[in-house]
Amino acid sequence: MASVEFQNVSKTFGSFTAVPDISFSIADGEFVCLLGPSGCGKTTSLRMIAGLETPSAGKVLIGGKDVTYLHPKDRQISMVFQDYALYPHMNLADNIAYPLKVRGETENKRHARAREVADVLKIGDLMRRLPSQISGGQQQRTSLARALVYPSQVYLFDEPLSNLDAKLRLEARGFLNHLQRDMGMTAVYVTHDQAEAMALATRIAVMDKGRIVQFAPPIEIYRRPATTFVANFVGNPPMNLVPVAALVDGGQLRLRADGLTLPSLPVSDAIAKAAAKGKMTLGIRPEHLRMAEAGDANTIAGKLFANENMGPESLVTMERADSGRVTARIFTDDEIRTGDQVTLSFDTRHVTLFDETGARIPA
Ligand code: ATP
Image: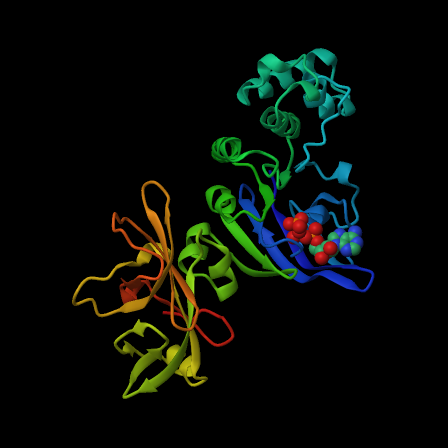
């Protein structure tokens, strides 16, 4: 296993800049997810690690060695693609053993090793079949087995689970999680699915327009999103973001928005600086809202927009007077109907404040 480093890497295609200038370093044994919306530069970054794209500027290092211009086959990396990329005319045994064949291993050795990996991935009894004769989930595991059959310095994954149905996806995700803990592999995993990134990563790099906006462990990203973009991208449903008017009055912070009742909050230097601009965003996660009871001091009110029963809980969405929506994840048997008045309450400990540029104000 080895570390991966980007030093001021950029990539342009003609006049279009896909990746402006990024630097990061991934330690040996880390499982890093590149997370972001479509077109933010995740795949381009992964392909530069693999050597399938050459940076327009900057350096790529694997295990401390400059590999910027090294051919993919000389990088000791394995890559798993979204479309599996299995050879259709080869049976599973030959598909899985292929990386060993190109490296000149004997037939006996390659088949023994392929079988070993296939057994771990529970496809050992399908080895004589062609890719067309197995399910999508089994194809995905075959492509994973092919990537794991030969020891690599770094494993690269490009949305490997996105062609699976929801149930298989969960199963495969659990398996990858297990594998990571077992092998301690260095991996870079591209996804636009925040739940996948949360479940798998030791650290997540959240990307927006070619830039890394936050690079931190999943729980840190969830609890302390660096910007409103991250807050809105991570969590399902995402953090509620309510634009508020901000004013420091008598050494206390007052926030105002339609439907919001919030006593003054203590002021720090950072809060005073942000409040001077007059605008902030108040962020609160859906699980930190509950149906208000008499005497609750911190509340937000509106009219019921939707009440979705998720089994163990409901997603209650209300629309405030300024049309802004707020969603709560709550346990309720209440019969609330569309248009009914709803008041939700929260604890100020769970409030995140962002300044007018969308950057989180440190607590
Ligand atoms: P997705 O989740 O949709 O795969 P992504 O985050 O992986 O998106 P990239 O595939 O890295 O995004 O693409 C980043 C940007 O660079 C996009 O706007 C894309 O259109 C552009 N791009 C990628 N490859 C090329 C290319 N070969 N020529 C021109 N533009 C490209």
